[in-house]
Amino acid sequence: MSDFGHTDFGLEDLPLRDDLRGQSPYGAPQLTVRAVLNTNENPYPPSPRLAEAIGRAAAEAAAGLNRYPDRDAVDLRRALADHLGHGLDAANVWAANGSNEILQQILQAFGGPDRTAVGFEPSYSMHPIIARGTATGWVSVPRTARFEVDAADAVAAVKEHQPSVVFLTSPNNPTGTALPLETVEAVAAAAPGVVVVDEAYAEFRREGTPSALSLLPIHPNVIVSRTMSKAFALAGARLGYLAAHPAVVDALQLVRLPYHLSAVTQAVARTALEYADELLGAVETLRAERDALVDWLRAHDFEVADSDANFVLFGRLPDRSEVFRKLLEQGVLIREVGPPEWLRVTVGTPEEMALFRDALLTATGRA
Ligand SMILES: *Cc1c(COP(=O)(O)O)cnc(C)c1O
Image (cartoon, rainbow, N blue to C red; front, side, top):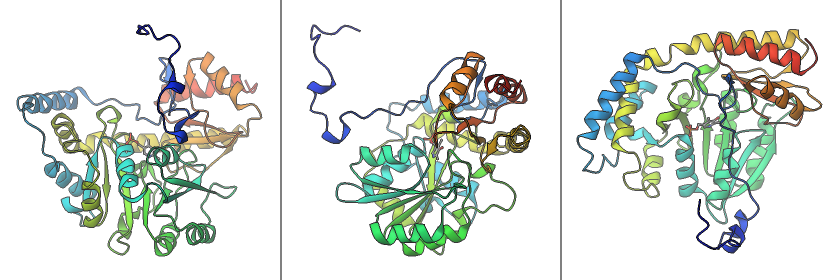
């Protein structure tokens, strides 16, 4: 790119907020390699039949693109509510461009200067980044050695810091750990503000693991956040949503940009929901592949966190960067994230997992 003649001009010459100086952006590498196992996407693309249906829906929406889209995305929210069940309707549901935008809107409405959000880490790196972007204070409470949230610790932290927003991620990223409902309930009862249960991976949880959706009628301060980016195999479409008390939805309308969700996005998401069974069809396969991967890693003397998600955190690797690099040299991209001696791998196709297993044995000298 041309430098417009200002060769010495840089970030430091801009009126950037002090709290953003020296910070780095979110940046999971986007590389073309044989096995892309670093951002927890579903490895199975839409079928040709669904891709065509999405194309038709987009073409129909295109015929009306001279007009702004439905600002309140009512049809889509109704379809999402039907999909979730639990007696929810459109008034309980809000949608945005990925659940990251949902989380940002939550912090715009309930966070901000002089306010605090609490999270239990290691957890999703975007929670503190979005807090920073909205100038919300961030308090990190450590999880236990098994990556669980200790209910008593959580309640104590909430009482001490009086956060307007609490993040509970279940199943948690990057550890895969799901939370018992009792923990969510204890936090919801103690919290002076809202409790966001980020359930981006809910569809992958093991049999008998609960969703916080069942708490919504009892705890009006609970917000359950979901996404079509993971189990739904639609990361490229950018559609996230939440279920909550209608008052929460009213609050978010105060901060959302008008027409934030394009007519094309709404049409694509509505069509995808009609194919929910097909899109979620791979979830069973991925759960089985995950459980097999956990068993295999343990059989090879790795430490593995129990996972209710479509990824697995494993260790202990005294030099995890070296293992990461050696995997990449063999065409396998995973994620250097979480506690220092651990790495996270997304569950891919059987072929990708075979490649990963071979590459890992080589990378760790176990071959
Ligand atoms: C991937 C992920 C999201 C999803 O983000 P989108 O913006 O919906 O793609 C949200 N929360 C967690 C914990 C995630 O891992």
